[in-house]
Length: 480
Image (cartoon, rainbow, N blue to C red; front, side, top):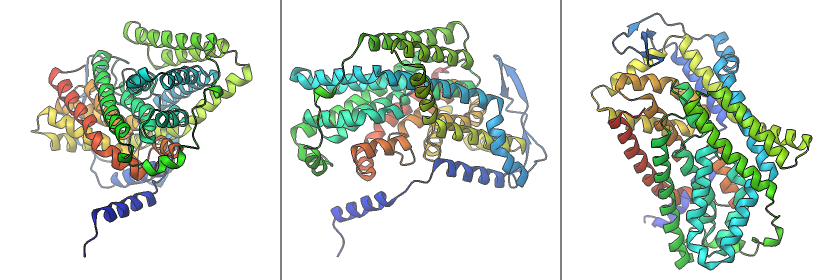
């Protein structure tokens, strides 16, 4: 006798729950060994580079075979050290540390948290505002994902939004989705995200924040898509709570969770001023990058100033500000290691003279395809790579130096390559079990990953439809 579908589904979910994702750093070290092995297999090759519009690009007709230099044991052992000491990686690491530290100071002042708490209480207190709860907060979190790459910070809002969603008649999936999918939608359609867009543009050798107008349109579409997906599901659950895949789980936690307004501290004028300073800083960032030619160093300095001013306005002591800054740096330490190891892989295969051979093989595989099809295939590649390298900045360090010249060869602008990277990274981050943020968010909400994946997987297709259309438009219009 065959098993019924519910039993099959239960067995599948149990298998997923037993799945334990390997550590990202272990995966990166494994990739390093894998590519070291490839240096003994792939023959050497070289393209000539020509100057165009202020950057070096590949001459597609100049490929020639050269002698490879396979990586030995010494080269393999030295590769991680070379990754950390590479001049561009040092600049990126400094930038990430300063940005993360500055945001940690702002978080320490409570400005973001208090503003969101006050807004959440307002929606909970007035039934007439209920229909606007999901759109308002998804837009808010999406903006934060788009402007400063909110990622790990989402975790602290889960204990607030899960009980709030339950109090409004929804379920814990809605409570997770509003901040998490909201921020992820902003990540995928990021306008100026310093951890993905700006780093990828620097690696692609194009002006930082350039092309922001088209990305702003994409951000709007991804955000509306998130509102439509989460809002539609929330309405269904509000009408019939038993339709929720976490219905039984939520019944158990109803008495445990509370949205007690007494526990919320006041939203002070100092915190309001900090939010104004942050908003003004983002405006200055865009102006500096587009009008003054700012690069990573100038932007890092701006974030440092924002952090110092926020500490002063928030009346943090010197020790509090310094500790908050260091805590922010600790939060991105794993991403920094991944970036260095990603660069180590690139340097290893560059020294072995096989990068251009890989480019030649990829360009031949895409030869004859329309550039739109090639671009969509690159989106698939970026999405798959994100399962192994869930760090956005780390993935940029690994893939952009290869994908950017590949785009030159197949007729895709480097701006479009960056767009492909950020959308492939942002969309898959919502579901991949190798992402520490995803698993931490689900852990805070006590939602099994299998339940979340089963609920979200079909809905991701809508985000990918947005990505496919956006990338096609970018290719056809020569987005730059």
